[in-house]
Image (tube, rainbow, N blue to C red; front, side, top):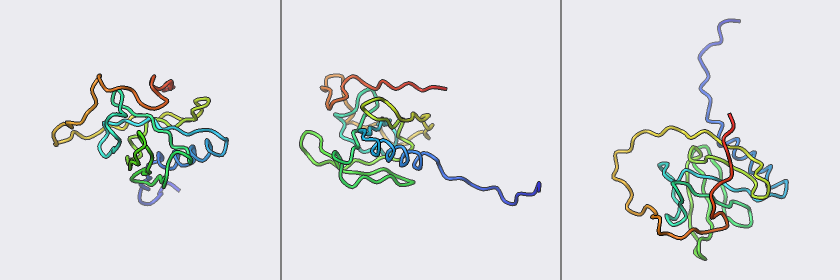
Length: 145
């Protein structure tokens, strides 16, 4: 059986892993958080939430509306400073999903990006922007190889 026919092109595992881990964290009574590379193309988050090119998002069912993890995008609505805000990102922008309570979850390798031909964003955060949300100190996750 050396002839396997045409090679099978597999889809990205990341959206499937994110959905499974999200469900596992929620079913376990945890609060799922996403660590996102905010500089990745297609990431739409309020600029003031970004710290060192990353943003941590609480995606617990009580914190978001319309949470959807698809093969091409993750989308939901949540509140920042009392204002309803649409958030969207490709699954490749997610660097980790974990439970806030104990850090259980999974980190992912950063996906190399193609160089962008557009001009840099003018709305990038500055060091003078105050931290927001419960995760002011950055992530405690480490990539284990």
